[in-house]
Amino acid sequence: MLLSSADPRNYGGMAMKQVKIGVGFGLWRLGMPPAETIARVAERAEDWGLDSFWLSDHLLAPSPELDVVATLSLLASRTSRMKLGPSVLLLNLRHPLMVAKSFASLDYLSNGRMVMAVGTGANLADYAACGIPVEGRGKRLDEGIEVLRTVWRERVASYHGRFFNFDNVTIEPRPAARTNNDFGTMDIWVGGRSDAALKRAARLADGFFASFQTPAEFGASMAKIHDYAAGYGRANAHIESGLILLCRISSSRERALEEMRPMLTAMGRGAEAYLERTVYGSPDDVIKGSPRDPSLFEQLDDEDPPNGAIEEEDEPAMAGESAT
Image (tube, rainbow, N blue to C red; front, side, top):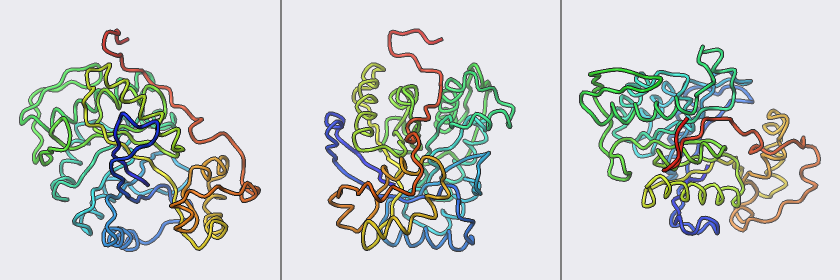
């Protein structure tokens, strides 16, 4: 995973001010490791000076996956400097007040190291399983983000929206105050692929999380976000960005591919498209961005790229537009 902070005027050319590297866990496609192994990986990552540690979040999934809050508690107890967070949390499947309480507690236990990232998710079966309508899920996520910030910033908070209504709610401890973003509390990033997600990031987010994009795709997404942000009156907003990529370092590109093959096989359809958006090979291959040999892909399935699965969402209105 590569986390980057870039000059918004130069995203098309990917001119970067700073690049930070983090790691994370997703679905355990090859089986679950012991809990101690997970903790030691986080400790080693921090010893190497990596910036952050991230966890994916699914409900109905084809492979095992640990609960985000429980696992972040473990990581917080075994690290002291790395930022920690979900990438991304399916906020719509949970009441935002419960999420606000859990992540405020995690922020306290980690001494202010939590970063929140949220998204609607692409598996609509999750909504059915939780009894949550898929209609209006974009607006539900907008309100969820607003609820989080409201109760994190106000000692006695009230909120009245389409999906969430409450008065005089106090959550303590609240997250540590932040000076790096425009809202003064825990960072909230938005993930997703659709234009609605890009608009949501532009309007509400402290950062944007992309998954498995090429440099050109990532640059185009960020350019759109900054254009949309200007339309929402956030032309000077501080919006960070992150890109989730698979990574494998080995002695050569061919050797790295062989070491990744069990995982790619477990991924099934679309493995080639993921591989084309993966950082792998020798350190020199990765640094130089050496061209890939098409013959390396021969044994992998060829399906639509990961960006082909576009989640449908309500699109937030731009300034001057009416919200439906």
